[in-house]
Image 1 (tube, rainbow, N blue to C red):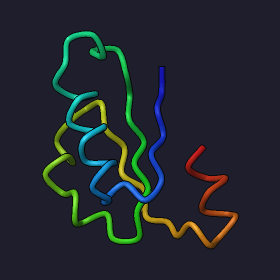
Image 2: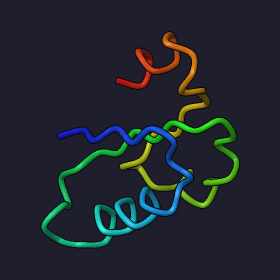
Image 3: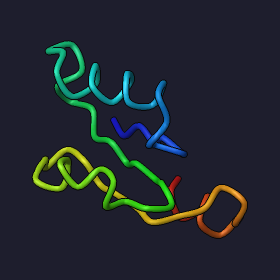
Length: 67
């Protein structure tokens, strides 16, 4: 299953990301994280379950690309 989080650098997004990546219940979840500056989450680059996307919520094309 894939979960997409838009504005992935926010406080709530960080809490959700941490739980999805660390709790055994969610071990089959793949994350797509969209944010304007993906380098802010560069520590997740090495995680094979995470895809980082450069995108802006005000751009409909970016939002469609993330989903």
